Length: 214
Image (cartoon, rainbow, N blue to C red; front, top):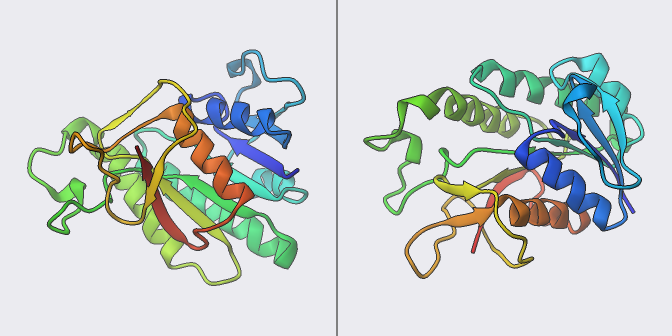
């Protein structure tokens, strides 16, 4: 059993990570800015208020954790790098006993078959650019960290990522999307959450990014 802190626990991804981890018997704390944003939680899950961009808030939750999961997002690109900074500082201050960071990343930084980031391809939707820029900067921030912080950045597919069903089956890749027989990269939020919790239980991508798809 691991002690897992999920920031952004009221969101589409965060709520599914909370449910997945709790179903496997982990000790889970669901952290949100406003506790009113949380609806019914799985049995055994604790609710807590916190701000992932505030060092003191992150440190208070991180001190007894094995993993802190960042599933926050929004159109303010600075949110993502501020979250990385606060989480990394909190972990660093705790020393070797500090938790691992698992970051719900973006798919725009993945590379297409020509080695070009999807963000840099023609026609990338303008409305998604603030989110994509924030997640790209977050990945860049992780890549500059030293070995005193352990992290993993999990990218969903760049396009086909939506609520669906949990199959428990998926494949992993590194910097290129995992493409299915139809030529598309797809994953449900439910199987993304399963892959994330699998990574907590069996670390295979320490201090690097990976992605998942069917």
